[in-house]
Length: 187
Image (tube, rainbow, N blue to C red; front, side, top):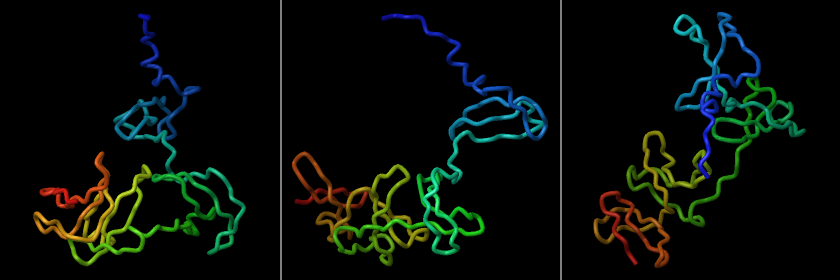
């Protein structure tokens, strides 16, 4: 079905503000602009006025009041939306900076795997801001070693690298060398 596209839809973002908003610094009209970090309001008086305001609300704003007391100060705990997703924190922030921690699951059923790069740290499962699991050295920021696949104790039979990874293939589970240069598959 070949239909005509309404070209005005592509420029609608510039007029998306419900009513004409004014800049709090200079009083000029605000418009919506886009950057690689997302949409934002900007002052039309730029460069004389540099006012900008993000339209993404990942600033820790309160989503829901939980009705539970904070263990540190007794204020109410609230569910907040932050930069890396939802979290539970104290409603008295910034005076009280209490945040509830999630319980971390141990890597590979209690088997501790040493970091092959620094030799001092252990590899632990972490979650990216998108919820995907990865394994990183607990000596971060000194050691930045990280892998996406589940680490296993052992060494590569081809190059001798001190870490193997568990990889699911069409043929089944395979052990793979963790060295980016080698990546030798073992049975």
